[in-house]
Length: 317
Image 1 (cartoon, rainbow, N blue to C red):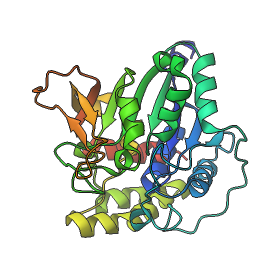
Image 2: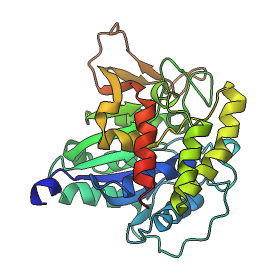
Image 3: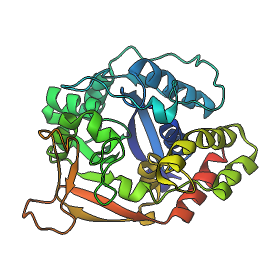
Image 4: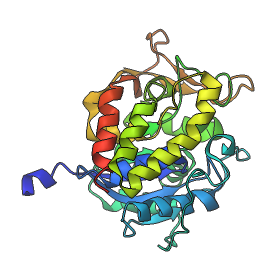
């Protein structure tokens, strides 16, 4: 047992739930390879008052009211908040009816929790997993630059290259909401793994995949089926696809089984100045810029194995 424990990875999930965020949290909490030190909520898909509440709802659904949930930044660094109720519904977890959480929100600010955790944990032992706008992470880096070199890795969902944009013609939502924060994180020098739309749009829900969750007959899996039923209607209408991408679980799946994904180590810069392409992740996929590489940018995944992992793990809750 001792040897196996040494492979457990300590993570902080920074999130703005969102149905796909919720699935990512369930995957993390049902995977013995990962130890969730805390969940930090940020404003994004819906405002902060809802994202912190949704994070607690999901912890309770997973039977883990012991997980510490912290509220973080309620607005981007320099811009007004843009939300995505048109995708996720008014609550962020629209679809099934959810009970109000009974577990407490921690009193400490999420940014201070991130800083304290990285300062006290062994160097490069904590991985940050941002699933929403990068406001909390960038704020922590601005406030305590000494923590940047202590981060093991940042594995994030955000950006796009071949898929270009989903909230504007050229930008993915998480990066667009706070491009200045994204710019700070991408320029920080921390080890970065990026799950852009290029890969998440290959992780589509299908009737058969949703049916596999439902067939488990367990509360969390049934909830996943109902959430995906709700938010896939938006993407199917928009893209004419057979299902919706489960973006955020790609981050957690990578930590458990990196072999599911393929990507390239490239330079990625974030556009913060142009009104036309604000929030675009300018990904140098072909290596033409001469700029130094700063991110492992994913482009492909084994969707069948990805969904098998989700069903296997969430089926244990």
